[in-house]
Image (cartoon, rainbow, N blue to C red; front, side):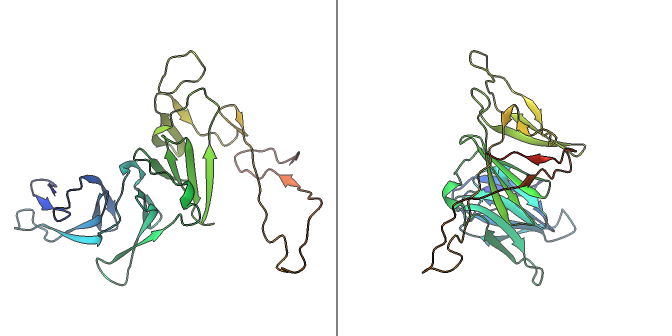
Length: 248
């Protein structure tokens, strides 16, 4: 397919037939993505009147973005949802125009939906990716390299997030047409993320823990735990209460 930045036509994808999904600024290039491939666009001349002011090069011929709202810069990477899962585009600084991709979701691949309406944001050292058509949000902790899955069932019919918004350092999101209580008309809501509340729009958080290495690495001497005692203290910089929490 052919696209044109400013008054110049660029041939991207070498007639693959895939439509352009997203164009993102990354490092010193533009990243153009179809659903099946990723390309780079780099300036070739300081003069727009030059015969070829831009050049196109292939970054990855088989991995592209299927949800344009999922493409977000995260630290020094560019994260997005592809047909193969959640991917991070990385720059190889030792060589010009050399980039690599890294699959970020190998441990959770079985729960990553192929949602073309997925919308992401970088917030609080995390990559948040909401899947409106599946009712889940996946959050990636950048420093801990760990994933968390959030589900939301407080409303009668919650249709997911249309857009994330950062306003004065605070996170908001705009919903798709949703119904709060049965019998009401669907409406679009703007909702702020309030970390001082131990609930999600009135829906109390439920947390489950799964332990590992219960045999303590001794396969012939299994250790069966009869009792577990957990001591929790709420450590939240946004919430002043730090009393111990009851565990049932």
